[in-house]
Image (cartoon, rainbow, N blue to C red; front, side, top):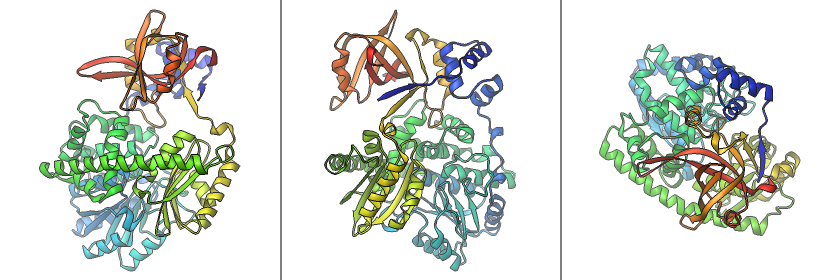
Length: 567
């Protein structure tokens, strides 16, 4: 792995150091995050509700609000239609909870991944018709659902789309389309997830009804969870939402999310990373292997007994998902080694009969991380393949799929993550076209994994003020990752330990000068022999607080290790 240390302007670093009366390493981190003045620091370190943008700046917001208020005032049913992932289910739950607080007659519907496929479905529209709803609001889907929206219009059901996926040139003929990525939308922040867009609709409704955000603050942890899971930048409005949502996680009114947190053993302060790796997989499991409506029911129910039952179900389903996922990951790795031309191909496209469509996204991520190139994983069944794609920096998946669309039955998503469907007859043509797109866009240098570091530092730079600074710099996530540092010529104290069920991790102690700290290296057991030579090493790491059995200590969470001469 190549290390790339950021080098902000030295005069700027010196200026920040003097302005904040702080250490050079802290000044470098601030410079890397474009926090150069005290006013910028106040804005960043004190996420304020008043800094949220006016929701009515979003195109079609006024139309959407008026249409929803009409149904609320006339007690007409409204159907919330959500996608089956974390973003979609949390958005749907938040919208249901808020609309009920606002006096709405609301029901929800989450499609079946295998039966309905992705996005707005005729089954959901038929359900709206049966329940007497003349208004359907999508969450995290619908932006490219042209035929389905026309189908709803034929049934005199108005569609309000709330979505954040990249739209085509043309928009569906919906009553209102809320999506900050619309080309004609001047909304200042484009990085909202699906739940974030739903949240803006909720705040707009609250404003019109003169209901303060404190009356529906219980939805914030749900929007925070969706924002964390959808890997959108923790900047601007997302930072404000996540900052306040995390603070409310242990003061939840409804039992569902509270039970899920307890089940995952998250009893103290919760981070974005813990939501992504401990909570999101349990929710996703509901839709990957079964009925995702259970996730929404978990979030909206007031019945504690039912919440515990649902949380346990999702936990068990997640364990089953892990077994299925690992089997597909193993097969995918074997396929790469047997079928792919890793010397020449700058993308991987893998397909198999029998792979579970519910895990292809996670598998694509695993393969992408291992081989560091754009990856498409497709589960084929009865001649139709359902696939997920994950990308690396410098390659826009959505644009690539648009270039290959003549071979696809459907596609949608973002530059870094997307979904698609392809027939078995067109698979080989799609594969060749996609790999050709990658060859035209990516260089050999792009294939090399790069570890970007904020700064070189010394262990003596880890002071109480430094730790307080790291704490206040959060919440962390894309766009505001936990700072990564490097130390040079470090000494390994004692004998490192190989840990983990399969011996994949390392635990050891690092010393530099008079300072020493414990360190853990996840997935770095291959560095063991290097550490026992007694020679100095350079270490790339993040500094974190480790809590174990009631004790709190500082440790280095190591990302990479190199012999000092090679760095």
